[in-house]
Image (cartoon, rainbow, N blue to C red; front, side, top):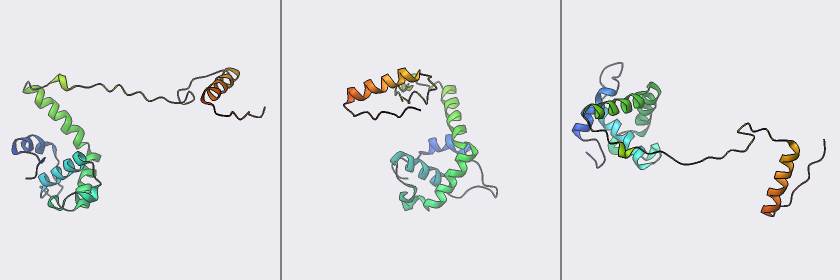
Length: 138
């Protein structure tokens, strides 16, 4: 077992959420799951997964199948339920992201009077020191 791979007790929690293959148990299921976890923990391309986990293409195929079937969503919900049942929920780990993404006013559906918009664009251009191209009248 490599550093970062699931322990036996962690695997006991995860395994029931992973689907069986149509032909029966998937060989090396734990190793494939560890490979997916390694890839996202490290942030590497799929092709850089270490050989100890198996063929990267097989691992990617398994990940894609799990994602399409909603396995990761079910796993997350199951882990939350299990930790709540054990009384191990730690709300101090809850985080709210305060990142703000600003969109152009057209993207937000804001309606601005054409004359006001022209004046605002002119003021912004002057403030930035950017020469303004006058629009031809229509």
